[in-house]
Amino acid sequence: MAIYSEEVADYIWRNGDIIPWGDALIHVNSVGHASVAGVFEGIKAYWNDDEQQLYLFRMREHMQRFLQSIRMVRFSFPYSEDDLCSAVIDLIRANTYRCGVYVRPYIFQKGMVRELLQAVPGKETELVIDSWPFDAYQDPDSMLHVGISSWVRISDHIMPPRLKAFSNYQNGRLAAMEAHVNGYDWPILLDDAGKVSEGPGACLLLVRNNTVIAPPVTGGILESVTRDTVKVLVETELDIPFIERIVDRTELYLADEVFFVGTGWEIKPVASVDRLPVSDGKPGKITTAVQKLYRSVAEGRKERYMHWLSPVYSTRS
Image 1 (cartoon, helix red, strand yellow):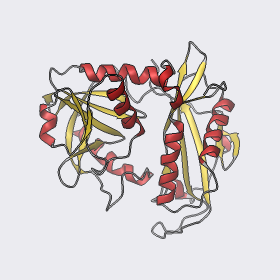
Image 2 (cartoon, one colour):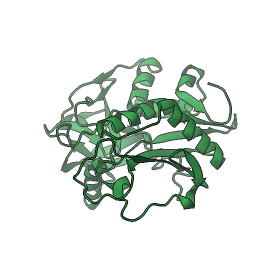
Image 3 (cartoon, rainbow, N blue to C red):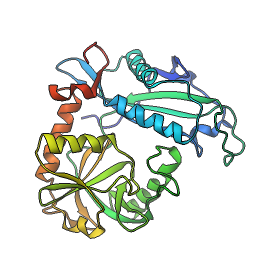
Image 4 (cartoon, rainbow, N blue to C red):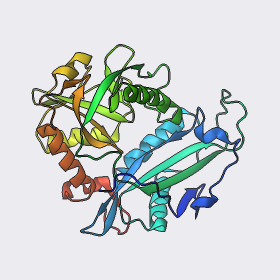
């Protein structure tokens, strides 16, 4: 399975036009795309080989979150949710993908930015939509050995995690670097009250007593589309309770299962936390069931959830 590709697309979407990828240039001083205020979204498309169809998974929910982030940073923005969705489909068709695809819309203030701390509400912006062949960040059949980070997750009164901003991800990068130095695959961050929050780029769920437990959205997490998907699948397809509540660090040591969920990660099982095995150190039955369900739904193999999918190469809805 191809997990990640360094390939670039033939075309990129920029400010309403589909242009050759290599022509999408900005000046080195136009640092708005990587500065304090730049925001983005991540969307996954899944290839169904049987139908020869590419499905964008929950694109509208992702675009709604993107628009919420844009609102929070007070950017000028002329595009509607429908405009954004149409632009993504047009771009993917232009690139003629026949594989899994990652799509990243991102927005930044136009022109040179000489003063990063000077907010300019309503200033003209640039909107770019990039895409590339993608399956998952890591092999879904592998497991992670994770450690609790000494870095604390950013909170709503500091840098709100529900704002999907490039700058917010530095918090997770620091934690990930520390984890690797300490011999772990990935970190788990606690919030400023010492309660379980999430990992860099992925939400965290645990299973205790046949119940799936999620830290609350007020615990320094991104309001995850994938987590919402898992909630629906757990309750509807597996008939298992899914509850949201504050989670203590030591509950991770006692959990029957622990797993990350996210657009890029999908469903990723955890083998150990702070070098304590999670149960027997093997993927749990609920984690495994959710992995299979998630893929089948995203690939358009369950009719019940077709309303979550946007087909690229047909008019099926």
